[in-house]
Image 1 (cartoon, rainbow, N blue to C red):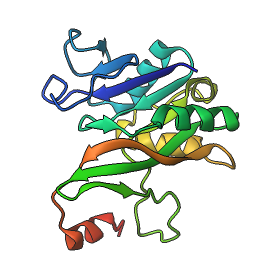
Image 2: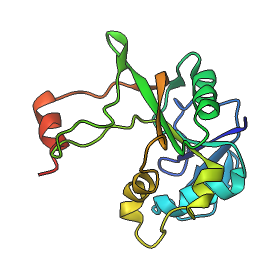
Image 3: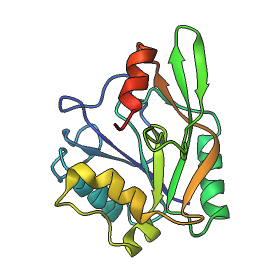
Length: 188
């Protein structure tokens, strides 16, 4: 199964810490010398995702955060296996590893918390099945601030959002303030 990555540049380029992947990479907001450039406005997430899906044509389109520092061992096998086992799956997400002073620590995503005041956590690296993404017409580019919610709503339903067992990505551990984070997760 074909796997294509896409991400956003930071200040017009990929950070030096970003792993140069052995898969096709589409890049929003940067020069073409680092990867195939997306023509869409990098401030419009919906337009970038739509263009990346169009250019990738088939398989899985994986969003990688700009601060990605690595991929977890076995990430591709787990992701492709989940896609093959779940034909109706549209949105695939998994756990991740935080790389910090204490080493790599597994972070389990919280897809359905049950408390409406908490934000959902889909992990930093996730994928869409391009064929299913096209079936619902992509994302609404006129409301880019709601693009991720648009994606999640279009993937609503049994067997359409698939949790991939095990970690997919490695990202640097942020400096943490647990009290501030708890407040930030609250929707109201």
